[in-house]
Length: 105
Length: 113
Image (cartoon, rainbow over all chains, first blue to last red; front, side, top):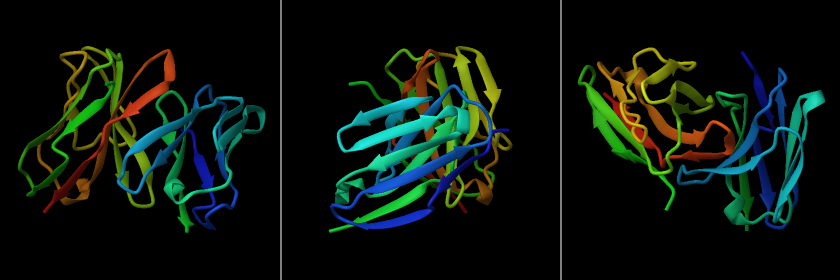
């Protein structure tokens, strides 16, 4: 099956810093999504991005399908950005293990 | 409000005592699925359903059953729970042609003693 690897596993930032999270996947996919799990466990869909670039406020994502990776950019991070970010790919949504982001005030 | 609801949110039970976690969505979605989340492993799919009376195994189906008798409901059944099923469970729904509209329920924390 499809393998999904995310890096880094953990990331600690000061408020206001920028960050890039990476998702590598092992096979061609027509579905790739980024999710944010907040400290209370709630999963929020951030982007549906099988290819190309999208932006939503301080967050943006780019997927290069031919090279099998996706990047999530967080600019001017805030403490509310803390949590775990998951990449999920494929029709049945295979999840990576996530990147745990901590933003300190 | 569009939402996926799960009940109960928290459950402590003992080995072998059958339990059911309910999942309901109000968006008329055809596709529903169950995931379990364990530390360091991300989310893994247990079962999914493409529509009423159509269900199939995900990556970790052992020890679980599901049913899809109505479009809005997709209960997860643990016939004989074991401690290795202690986990955080999520139900999700979407329309097949609109994967970007994937909604997750709030999660159910299960502890099996």
